[in-house]
Length: 99
Image (cartoon, rainbow, N blue to C red):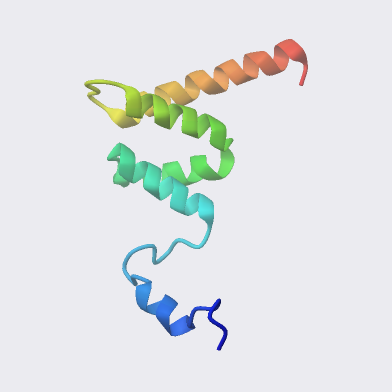
């Protein structure tokens, strides 16, 4: 066997059956991780939907805004507020320049 390849049995041993069990797409993993980072796992399906339908750059900007915020009472609320603000800003730019 060439040294560049890893045995499938070695890969399967590293896989944790309970964790990431139902995640099959990248956006699902991103949405789940985002919900976990914001401490809002009760609404993980919302974050997965956002990860699927919202441009990633907007999500990352809102995420970084929350990360840098100091003394936040509710990270999920701050995230959603910032995301709405970014979407509104993007929409205004779109209509202004006709793109």
